[in-house]
Length: 390
Image 1 (cartoon, one colour):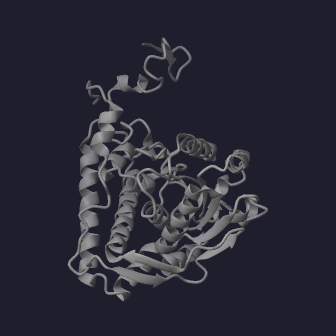
Image 2: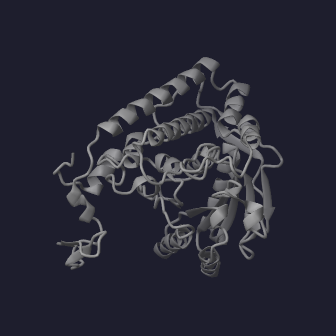
Image 3: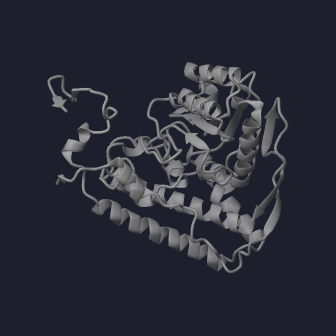
């Protein structure tokens, strides 16, 4: 079952990356811009001006956003099926319902900007350039995975995407450090550090706020408020649920995280704010996950099925963008069906490719632990008496 072939993560990564926003041109989608006025409740600001509600965006970009969200949801649905078939083991956190955050964010950034997030990371990994096959293969623990099959659901990385981190809140100070490096090197780019409402009370989050403001770092702290930290409602864990105001000396914005255009507009505003030297900014994305916290959580013991259905029916990010595309005659119903079908075919093919990939060689468990040349002679295994000698 195990291959004897050595795996280089660099080679794996090189094969794993594609650009998810390619080959998406449509006859009715000429390269013209449209002006869209966002709902007046899209933003709420704290110690800063709110972004403009008028969005100028190309028709092609809108179609790309729709295609990306549809593909992302199809990918997560496939992950759900693979987990239930017991082909994915361990932790698995899906972003179904929260697609607008990853898509809206990526379309407002460049490859030079950095993103770091927690364990609900599949969508961000895809938008940062990973192929669907490499993501699903990683979930399956196969050597074609984005991390060689050794990281699983919570540990996926691409260039300028720093994961996928399993320790609650620990990615936030790491993000501040990445932003510090950008400022130190003189890079005109920003670092976006994402965390959930459940992690918002971590002390290290506030320590990162302090350092970022003290040094005026190009850091954007993004709280994905999906209303529940595991199974605990936000108002039962946080004395102050206005997360965009909790930076105190850091200005903030509350954003409708179920509207991909509101996210896009807010992230573009945040990047301009930080790279222009104004220091850090805090964004709160109000979003919602349709499933449980992880695959082991049914998601219905602490909220009602009616609440979930209400969000699906009235606030779904894909349905919302679909209505705009049809309203502005950007694409037809038939073209939209073709996008949906193509996404299904692409993901189904990726599932088969991921399943066909072999498991990593057992010797790979001892690689990529220490930096080469660091002189470490041994590594301890899972059991106290288990050692590997380099």
